[in-house]
Length: 150
Image 1 (cartoon, rainbow, N blue to C red):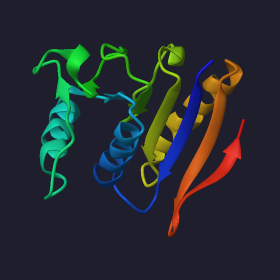
Image 2 (image 1 turned 120 degrees about the vertical axis):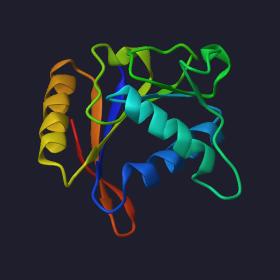
Image 3 (image 1 turned 60 degrees about the horizontal axis):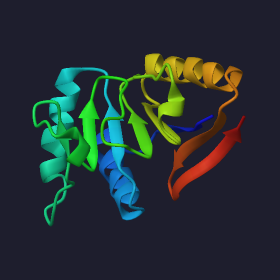
Image 4 (image 1 turned 180 degrees about the vertical axis):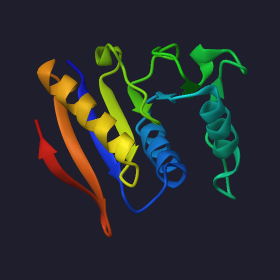
């Protein structure tokens, strides 16, 4: 069974949160896969990760770049783990039919989008029913606070 964390974005955008989470994963010597809801989002994230920090960038690639096995961060729309990632980040409502592809899955959703909240609730129910270890994290003024576990 996988560990699945649900991150409720309420104070910052995905574009601000995701790079920091990816940095943390890489600092732990983990590889990561980001599964997005569309190819357009993959391309937007690809561009973002080159310029989000004026002092550096996050090494990453996508299908256009190839060499998935060499990429510490892989951007995709597919349910895949071609770089042997420890963690998957699910954005834009992307889901995983088999979360056990990864030891850890993190679903990030926009708390200001009612459809995104509803999808996250559906994913929570399905993950709980499947017996995965799940936690819910809410963004607060001081950081992330765990609000529920199932």
